[in-house]
Length: 458
Image (cartoon, rainbow, N blue to C red; front, side, top):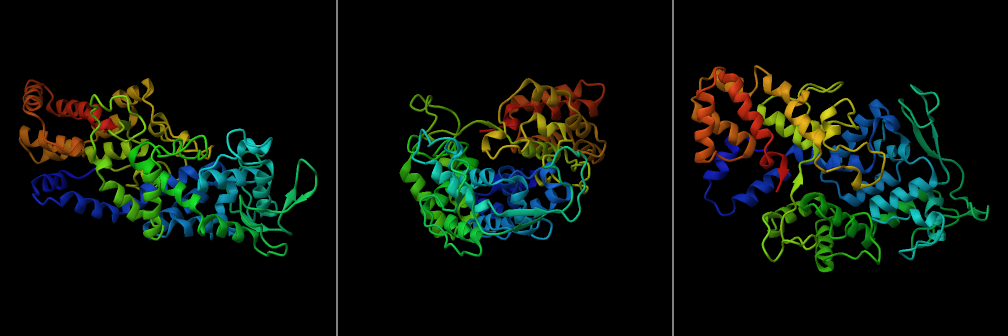
């Protein structure tokens, strides 16, 4: 959220280009890298059980640093798919901690980087697309010679072979390929509708990474569609990881234009995000009109959505001016910066933070639930910050700001606007007749945090 001072400056600015200028500034802020690293960490399943406690921090930091440096997304994908060596010293190789067998790795590469669901082709030719079992196992064969060793093995659950708390070393052993489960013959790797590597190819993962990202239009389309989805709330192809003939894009020309812009921008994230945020589609309101009240696919109005769990918790902390305090994390770390699943933060689980057990955007829930209402009404995370003696309310009380100034600050901090005349009169009246002014201001702050205007993006 903008600070109250930033909001005042924006509202007072009469420059017609002020919005574009703010967007350009947001793209360069460190929070940009934090947020998009979170999205990639969800998709690549950066979670403690598979990665280990240190592993989730190392992988999250790598993702964040890549995005902060505006590394092209195709280059980032190549590093992940071709990653080998120590997970701690070469974090992209952590991809193979969660994708531990050839078929899982093939399904993940297709779903994450191409937006294709190949799972059906494991047992039979795909019923809704033209992918065959040969396509499926040809892709899986790229991962048949991946091996692992663990210099330091630390386990809490001796029966769970996937739980590794120490480092893991990823390497290739022998030639590429795998045993075809249908024929029991050795199967050579082959990309989807691409040329197979040479029989003596020494680095088959590099061959796959190159095929995946070099002049691969489907990689570009999938990437552009995912960025659009995260900013707008719905993919042009929706679900975003289900590109197929029977699920065409709702606006093919738009997807082509975004893909072209992504390529023109050097496959970098910032130019595409900036382009979308400056568009009229991104700025459109959520209030329906008679002509679009039933429209769900053409982006004719904004999609009203619950804020993501981490964003919402950070917004509460910022509104109340109380820094985050999370187990095993440095003081002041924001929820968006937390690596792994952070299962010890009940608020995040209640508001839909995914367990990262699936390679799917669908795992993050944006549904509203009764449990969320209880968490906001009387949950520990909100109550602790409201009652903190040194929070925004405490600081304004110590400065002895008048009631009008205090109310303005709370509204600007929470809702980025001033209170309406009726809101102002009712709030000032409530505080004035309260026997405990501090408690009254806490009540008002609590009411703002529980409002739809604060909880929902619209």
